[in-house]
Amino acid sequence: MDDPDDDRRDKGEYDEGTHGSQQLVVPKALVDMADAQQPSEPSVSSDRAEPVTTSNDAQEPSEGDTVGPELSMLHRRSTRTSVFPSKFDDFIVNSKVKYGIEKVVNFSNLSFENKCFATMLSKSFEPRSYKEAVQDPNWINAMNDELHALHRNDTWEIVDKPKNRSTVGCKWIYKIKYKSNGEIERYKARLVAKGFSQKEGVDYEETFSPVVKLVTVRCVLPLAVQNGWKLFQLDVNNAFLYGELHEEVYMSLPEGYQSCDVSKVCRLKKSLYGLKQAPRMWNEKLVSVLIDCGFVQSKCDMSMFIKNVNDVFIVLLVYVDDIVVTGNSVAEIEKVKQNLKTKFLIKDLGMLQYFLGIEVLTCTAGICLSQRKYCTDLLAEYGMLGCKPVSVPIDQNHVVNNVLSSNTGPLTNIIGYQQLVGKLIYLSHTRPDISYAVHVLSQFMHSPTDGHLKLAFHLLRCLKSAPGKGLLFSKGEPFELKAFADSDWAKCLVSRKFVTGFCVFLGNNLVSWKSKKQTTVSRSSAEAEYRAMCATACEIVWLKNLLSELLVDVKLPISVYCDNKAAI
Image 1: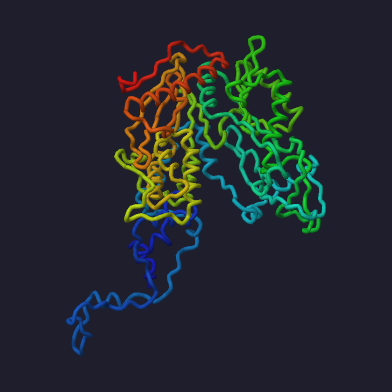
Image 2: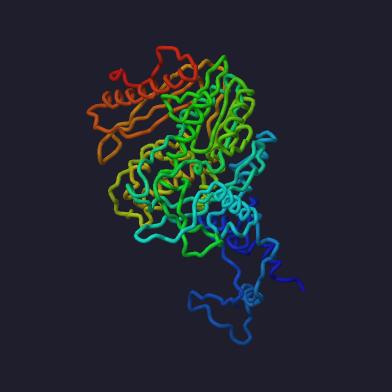
């Protein structure tokens, strides 16, 4: 006899939320969250079904009456417990998610090297806790390597906890490093201190440390494309350990550390990731080494270093421990690498391809910047992989304020909203099309409502339509600055302040943009437009000085376009 469960499976009577699957190779729980956005189909129950009567005509059949076919079918259903085949437990196939992520993520147009790199990024998994990491021997080895590096550097000494002194906690952070061809270079485990528990004046003094502006990165990349320069990436292993710690700081033992009594603590001798003063100590050390190598620190961006000697021009960008090097002499760049390796433990990552969560893809047209993986991970985190995409980040005529309406209320999870907006802010570094929407959401971080959360999820639906959208830096036109400035008409109902918006192009390449509420109330549209042009002019002056340090001759005058004659 045929198994009735097989018949029901052929007819599609199984609940797609629990047994269905889609062609994405993702865990089943992820698609379950996406399916929850749509009405679920009825699931098969093992209980004996009973007919439902809605009127007095539905009587029990008396002797001699015949039972109708519908009632007969209901009573013939099997009472056996259905078990879905175990081969479908891990991955999902044939899901009825109407707007699957596979419809908007496509690697068919990428080159073989870029396709391999994008595929490796999609397959990788980074644990978020120590319990998840110990399940994989690769992460166990990474944590052991980190502990060995800390011991070699004499980072701490094990002592008894002193009285009347607080200790700083610590946590493991996990990250996968990639080679330029997309292969996994190494599993990186980082032990960081919970510096938020430090006390100012006791555990630390000065904390500020500069990092390279992403606007500077977007100016250097078109320059490299225009001149045919190669871009190289370096990573400093255990960078913060090279900084000297002047204060007395005590830290609890890390998870998995079993070489001594758990009542002991670590007295730090060197700076450690997570400490308030650690970035500053490392930056001071790195700057001194680069200056000794012949570099000059930029006056426009303190994290850009330039070496211009005997027709050799080298540009070095620093973001904490990630370094990008480019220039007109590959041989001189190799010398710079060797000099840095004598001072620090340097990992040469080859050609620039993945920097600060930004994918750098080189093609015949130029260099493309995108955050496809970051965007898809964001959609997966909030269960929006199966959502219906929309074409605009925010409605043009939508007015947002912080006044509660009748159908909205304050959010209970304010931190969750703040985390979401913070991730969207970082995504806007390669997505200028969402800058205004992110600006609107950022105004209500202190007291968001349900309406603001709906706007944030609407923006996620917009990201679903094109998660791989980014910036293309191409060559061709001469490097001339031109800008566009504009402002709205007092759209904020609370303050009646105008919003400034501008974008600056270097040739055909978009390098800088901003959407920001003005600090004062303008009394006319002309005044608001004038303030917008003033902010644009300030950005242009800074960019001109930056490009001058990069030996780019910017022709004057610089064109600024505005749609208000009164302001001009």
